[in-house]
Image (tube, helix red, strand yellow):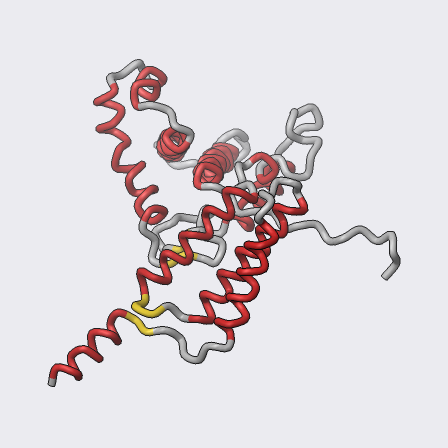
Length: 259
């Protein structure tokens, strides 16, 4: 290794929930456009059965309606009021917009607010989260490739390699630090006595983010002290035997003690 070799770049932070919602909207637009492309050429018209063009147009319309639903979800994630959404849709009243789309927004929010599990970086993991938000890095990269393949040289987004993923909102290091609390909170929720190895992972991950904040020049003066405490705590936890005690196991112990 040469002395002038650049240090490895920090990995990108996870997408925020707003970024994930925009990813879903981008994917809905792609699906609509992809389906609509099949109806442009009249080359196979002579082989079509009666009503086939109307059916294809209807299926395209349904995909566009799905894009509208994700547009509303994204608007809500961005903080847009129901009044403004209603004005954009007609105009219609706030109550009408809420009645039409509130369930869609709630279905999106539910697994984010109370997921089945939480990753180390604080992001939710839940089968109710639809693709590509459930695998956002893969999904965003796929959309990058698709958009570039369907772009003309004069399109404003065609110059970069990441026309989708490069613009989706990601956590800053500071907000990523805040998000890690969701992981430690979930450990306490899932277990009466949290798994010490998972707690150690959380402490080390927190220290990694603090060190990144130092490199970025955004860390408070006490950051070095916090990093040291995290590393010491992680080391001690890794020497702790066992894998925690679940609430279910604790109930079993209590029942045995009462006999």
